[in-house]
Amino acid sequence: GSANIGVTGLAVMGRNLARNLARHGHQVAVHNRTNARTQSLVEDHGDEGTFVPSESLEDFVDSLQKPRVVIVMVKAGPGTDAVIDELVPLLEEGDIVVDTGNAHFADTRRREEALKTKGLHFVGCGVSGGEEGALLGPSIMPGGSKWAYDRLGPIFESIAAQVDGTPCCTHVGPDGAGHFVKMVHNGIEYADMQLIAEAYDLLRQGLGATPAQIADIFRTWNEGDLESFLIEITVDVLSHIDERTGKPFVDIVQDQAEQKGTGRWTVQNALELGVPITGIAEATFARSLSGHAAQRAAAGEAFGSGVTDGWVADGDRDAFVEDVRRALYASKVVAYAQGFDHIAAGSEEFGWDIDRGKTATIWRGGCIIRARFLDRIREAYDDQPKLESLLVAPYFAEAVSNGSDAWRRVVSAAALNGVATPAFSSSLAYYDGLRRDRLPASLIQGLRDLFGAHTYRRVDAGGSFHTLWAGDKSEIQS
Ligand code: NDP
Image 1 (cartoon, rainbow, N blue to C red):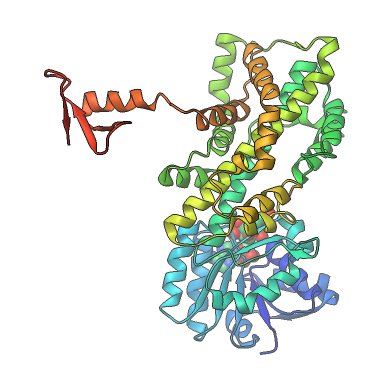
Image 2 (spheres, rainbow, N blue to C red):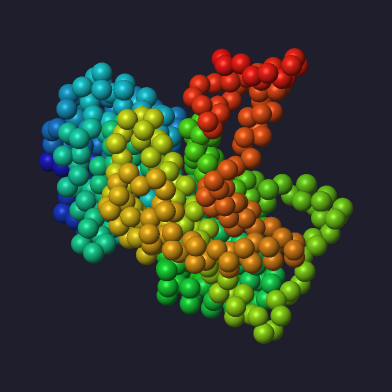
């Protein structure tokens, strides 16, 4: 075969990834279960580079140079397993199968294990940036063996987004590490969007501002620390006017947020690992709450919405906007700190040795959470690879403590005026909880010991203890 890389699965993502590869001078073997997609790719974009189309999977495999590199970009779940099952008998020892779909990292671990026994390299690879990213340069998060990355890395680095000459692609770690990091990326994306939505809601209710006016505020914010893709597109969405009604677009869209499940995966796994990713969890639950239309209607009828209209006094408007900006930034720092803690915990649990500084580096471009402040995160982890929490790195510590008065004013104003800000509020609670010298967890330990003899540790002695609560309340060592 003559092609140096192949893509099977040519829906929007696979099609654009194949075009990106071809545009960068790779000879790309292309295949799709339904041949019409392959034909249309070659007809519409054949002039962008060298495509080697095949109608059957056998011909597709034969058209590849050995050791073969096959990218599978199909519907995640059973679709991916079906394609792998078909592909494996056609491959030879040393070939590399790359799954760029949105797989759960546990599936990736299972598939990697299975293919390894057949002498094949399986690379679970996170790709972020949507359709446009796939075509113009995504953020690429490959897992799998070092050996596979030596072969794949140069190809992926050539098609990834580039920031300051550095590609947004690195070998994340063995087996499921790439898909794990992609999962946490998506979780952070949930938190980021929820925080933006809460900031918008506060400005709208507090100031009685129009979506277009709020778009202008976000436009200004995008020139500072908050500069990011999500803030940039918030300006576009808020300033958009619905063609049919002439109303602001945000007012004609149903207010029930949907999800494909990666936020849920992140929260489920964080619960298993015991990592408090409260920002991501609140963001995921906020989407669920928005979807419960009947309950919302019942509660609205029972209580009314209770929001104070335009509570910010005329003379306080600029200060309020600045407070919301600071609260948004501080909450965002918390969400990222939690996400990076989650990566550290996953890395520890599965022995992946993930470099968090490098992870921040490859999220600077191409992906949905790309943002100016990822440079700061990279610097923080480059300075101190074992940093206890992003919150205590000098730059972030300053941002959070400088913003904390504003944060408190915003969260209390939200509570007093009936605006729900689950992500702002829980991020502040996390910050306050984390820095306390004594937490009321001591009382919880006492309760657990009383009703269940679960024992406790003392501040002044080693070992575990139990109090004989039903007896003379003396203490025994257990
Ligand atoms: P879809 O998820 O809609 O999947 C459609 C593709 O999968 C088609 O090529 C289809 O073939 C193929 N397929 C499904 N089942 C099978 C099967 N049993 N055997 C063979 N082929 C099968 O495509 P997208 O391009 O939207 O996404 C591809 C992957 O990328 C998914 O895993 C998705 O989660 C992930 N992803 C998507 C992003 C996005 O923005 N859309 C962003 C990042 C990742 P056929 O044409 O014959 O039906």
